[in-house]
Image (cartoon, rainbow, N blue to C red; front, side, top):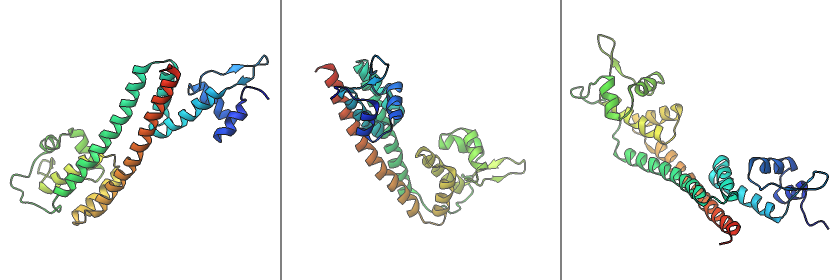
Length: 233
C-alpha cells in the first residue's frame, strides 16, 4: 500500500472532488504537495489535517479570512494569525452591538404619528446633523421612499418630527444591515403602531448571530490547536 494519498483519496475523505483539492492547495489552504517522478501529487496525513482545519475555518470565518489564517499558520506567523482571529470576532461583536442598539431603539420608539410642527420643522442639513449622517445619505433615502419630507415655497425639503423619527429608524436599520425594501416595510409597520414584525426580524438576526459566534469560536480553537501542532509547542 502506498504511504501517500492521491488527490482522489484526499477528496473522498472530505467528500470533495479532486479538482477542489488542487484548488485548496493552489490557494494556500494546504501546504504544497510532494510530487512523484511523473509529476503526480502525493499528499500525506498533514494535508488531510490541513484540509479538515481549513473547512472548519471557512465555516467559522468565511472563505477569505480562513485563507488568510491558514496562510499565516503555514508560514509560522503567530501575530498575523491572532490579528485575523481578533478581526473576525470583532466583526461579530460590532454586528451584535448594532442589533442590540436597534432593539433598544424599538423599545423607545413611539408610534410614528404627526407631532406639532413647531420646533420640528428643519431642513435637510439639520436633519442629517441630528441623525449623524451625511446630507447625501438623507437625500438618497428620500429618493428610495423611506422618508417623505414636505417642500417649502422655494422647493427645499423640510422634515417634521415624524420624518425625523423615521430617519432615526432608517439609520439604525441600515447599520444593522437591512436593505431599503425591508426598511420600508418596517417603517410602515411602525407607522401603524405594529413594531412586532421589526422586532421579530432583529431577534431572528440575533439568533443567527449566536450560531455564527459558535462557529467562529470553534474555528478559533481549531486554528490555535493547529498552529501549536505545527509550532511544536
